Length: 98
Figure 1 (cartoon, rainbow, N blue to C red):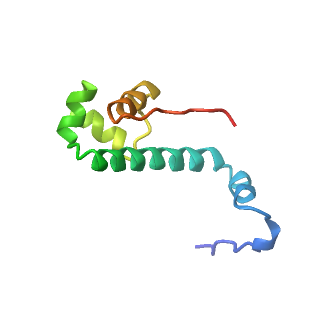
Figure 2: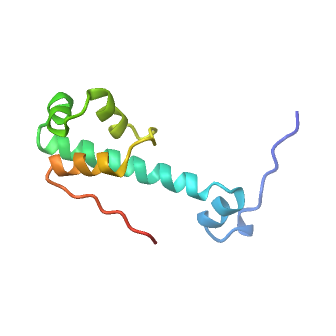
């Protein structure tokens, strides 16, 4: 078995440089964004003392679908679903190109 090559970190100026070089920047960014959204939704639910069941009813969806929305690892969630979740919690969803 070959030992992994250890890189000199001074070759890269930023984490973005590393992610770009590895070809994983987009995937890592999407995972981070989904994790933050899921965390924010959970925090808003806690602030409103809203259970998963009550949230699912308000969204007119199943608890299984809501669990996917709140799962940082699940990426098959539509913007429409995220928007409905935010609206139920008295929030909005902001999506922008950067």
